[in-house]
Length: 292
Image 1 (cartoon, one colour):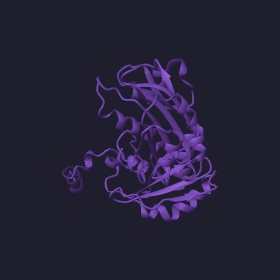
Image 2 (tube, helix red, strand yellow):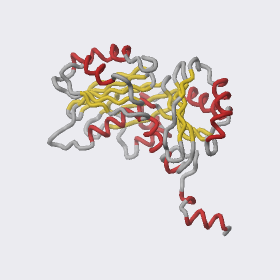
Image 3 (cartoon, one colour):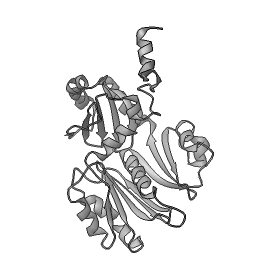
Image 4 (tube, one colour):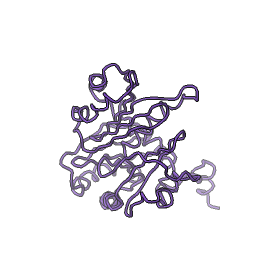
């Protein structure tokens, strides 16, 4: 056994997942690595450098980035030398669907099986050429289903790789934030006190809203490319119809990809009489990606 092999065992690096293993957490694959996260929207590209201790650097937004080839080539020259291996994570903010489904297969491990053999889990809902991610409601027969176009993901991955980046993770930022809210509001619930809330996600122009009433998922609406930058007025117009359908006093829990100015005031103006809980914080999405 070579000396470097012994050292790898002694410092546990031999037991780390491979960098290109998306099933493992980012922090386990890239401990103390410099990297970069990207947000890919319909028209823009956001850039978020990650330091050795998973500290998020100042973001940069590239407008008019509908075609990624040229912007990525321009960014690669400065970004890749400041990373360890050129590894990146990507949040897709366009070309996906988040839907509420019922009576999907609950066979053991179905939330993982749907990623490799979706037909066995989705049955008649399966579409060829799609990638899926699934979260079951543990209390009811409903599920949240994320659907992405396979060719679109492959195209994005190819463009980043051709620019010299290593793609360590591709995810949907809105879905990540939705799960974050669900975990937060359901962390302390119990059979005697089921959880009810209106969940609202804002992620780089995308919006997702979910009504949870006494642990049951009642209604979900998801749209991409709704607003630009910090101007969330179009998003408030989109979710305003929920106001008349929410039970009196139901909490509204919101999470944005980062801290947005006047977010709580804007949500409170639409949902008058409902307590507002804002889980947003600077770089929330990118911190979640760096840890998971």
